[in-house]
Length: 254
Length: 254
Image 1 (cartoon, rainbow over the protein chains, first blue to last red):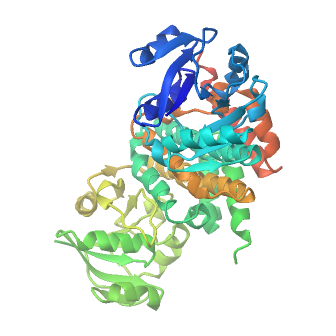
Image 2 (image 1 turned 180 degrees about the horizontal axis):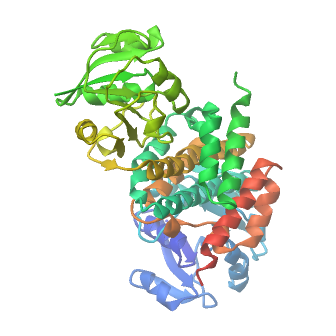
Image 3 (image 1 turned 180 degrees about the vertical axis):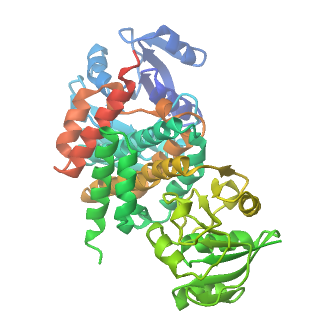
């Protein structure tokens, strides 16, 4: 049995906590957080404490807070010679304030309060400075997911960047589309079968193969007319940028 | 029983043909196409002819070819006083060469050869110049889908543009992410649970609500470092453009 302390009370912390609860090999013995209200979620089944409070003994300390809070939060924690990891895709293990035994447990997923996640299929990327700690981390990550990857920082941050493109920018494209539809009193719901199919295709073929649309076909007339339909500024810049990039991607094909 | 002739042998034509085959209210009596090889797909169960061949009598003629082929193909067809529609999101009904009885049947979906589509959930947008023809079109569209929308050109083209953003550009974002991953020898497959979750969220909440990531949080440090990781040119321009657009979208929120 591996024991863990979770530091943080946000979506990642909650989903980790829930996922550990159904495993038999990892036990969360304490949750630390800034907000008493957020700690209430954990209080019924687990000890809780403020960030500056007394920390229980455990095999691993998991700092599950937003990227920009990792360093300040790690500075607050009174941990000495304890194995401490963060859950960020974009920070080095070394950025933790602890003097030694640092690591990373990065789950590649977007977590929201209201949605359950099947953690077993989430890629979990791990890294540890110390070989013994790496064994602890493998056990912890393996208790969560069937897809554990030991990755150095250089690969992890590229993965996080790819996730920003796919998830954050992909979602924002949907928002921009939603705004266009609202202006015509059309419901975004009309897009859902298309979105489902767009992503379902990627389960079987590469995005390069899946590409369709005016830019892929070289349909200049449609592109000219669509550009004129768009508001000036962001929309037009984006339209040109993406179409040119698509054209460039397939220019090598004859 | 409504009779139909399909003009075209590509993905849209095939999927329409398959969808009509399982209905009892619409019968495809002929398929016209340029390519004898492509016509072979239809030949076993239906009469076929070249584009300039003799056309059978039918209630509706559906030109299901790519946007840039609609006008030239419609010019080839010897149709007189016949109800003729195209399946394009970006063209007016009036662009058809036929002198009268023009219309549109636009299915809002991306069709690929290898994937089956549940046509009943695909939004089908219709338009017809003549009220009697509109009744024919309603019957035909209703035989295909439970989601039939009668929309003027101004709304249909905006819908098509939104679909380009969501589907074509969304897919290209995935390709750009794939290229970043390949450079680090990471498999695109690692992105799939994230992609599934990103789109599943949109079934319940708006894209505006679903937004996460460094730009949404105002995490300047992560954005600065990610920008430096990207190749110059398209990637960096896209990164700045999308992040600025996300920041602008949420700047109104306090």
